[in-house]
Amino acid sequence: MILALIGALLIGLSLGLLGSGGSILTVPVLVYLLGEPPKQAIAESLLIVGGIALLGAIPYALRGLVDWRNVLFFGLPGMAGTYLGAWLSRFVSGEVQLLTFAMVMLLAAYSMARPTPLSSAKRASRKAWKVVLDGLAVGALTGFVGVGGGFLIVPALVLLGGLPMHLAVGTSLLIIALKSFTGFYKYLHLLPQYGLGVDYPVALLFIAVGTLGSFWGGRLAVRLPQESLRRGFALFLVVMGVFILGQNLVQGH
Picture 1 (cartoon, one colour):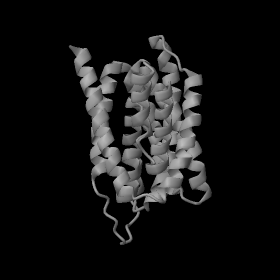
Picture 2: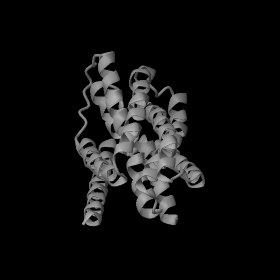
Picture 3: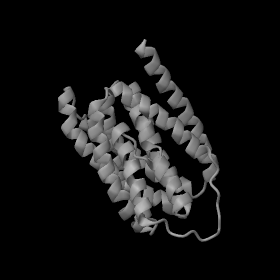
Picture 4: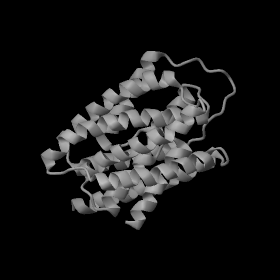
């Protein structure tokens, strides 16, 4: 359990520093350190990450570091996409979800490792319908594999929306919270079909520890070089993605 609590702290730290990565850490911690079934872990991941992200977004919102236009056009369609993704998950096994999850981790690693061009030129606002489609797509992925999608949201807000990194992080946290709670609501109705339920004491403990990590990460974020953090996190994602792929391939034989 000590290792799991350290994992919870790292989940919050990642969200506070980068506005992403929390759920990519949560599912492996719940599955491999606490031994939970994949579908239960994915459901609890959505609750845990949603709670940490919501509480972590409050300091950003108070400092005016939330772009409400993107919350509206990206976050609300993302909630619908998340519900759809959670509904689709009923047609596949937990092992298929974990394999998809591992592939998403490797995609996230590539996204995080790419250098972020910092152009001083003023970017035009992305058209609303394109932002809506982005939100739907990321939301569907969120519901299907239990990820908050911050690793896709942050680059989209920075590269496509032209937001500064800290504004993108604050906005991402609020969008993650909206989408995660929507996906969790759907999983509440799916878990009984598998004889599973949510372990609320564990989830609440993770939220409490993770929120501390999130506040700590938010303070560190303004002092540490973002590119180095992103690349270090990308390396960690590659290791975890390969580990999960290996575990599933071994169990499949």
